[in-house]
Length: 196
Image 1 (cartoon, helix red, strand yellow):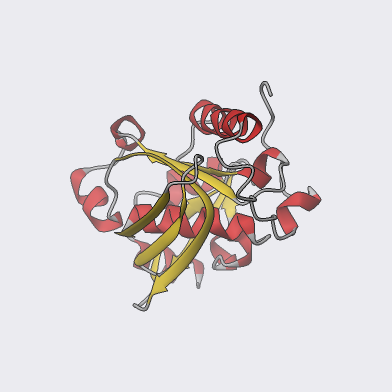
Image 2 (cartoon, one colour):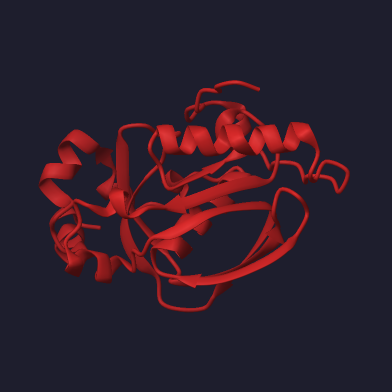
């Protein structure tokens, strides 16, 4: 399949519901090649998740991974506040996401398909995802904190939703401005100062 570029907001595939992967596709060479390409693109970016539509591919597949090296700029207190913990590579085909009811947790999010921007986005703190891996083995993962946020973000991509559809609009900005001004402040302070 080779290297595929991550498509940006405005591409129609990012605004449509991706199609289900059929049982016949599971474990087949084209699907396994697509998954490898997705993993490579996510790691190259670097990012913590990627959905097939972000490569222009209309399939319900997500890959996720959060490594220790991606958290180096966070203090231990920031990691605890976000629920940010490393987890190994996950490939989920045809994910079905169940939101566990809770108060929304608000943190900054960005997206590889909305390059260079971020905003505060409310998300539930805990989810359960069910689906299969790329070979068709059933899986279920109940998770909270940052991994739950990543899952919600990536599953949104499969339904044509971007984080900008869920963001607190007054907090949206270019990372060159938002990062140095707001990333290190408590979310409550950012919301107050920006009227969000």
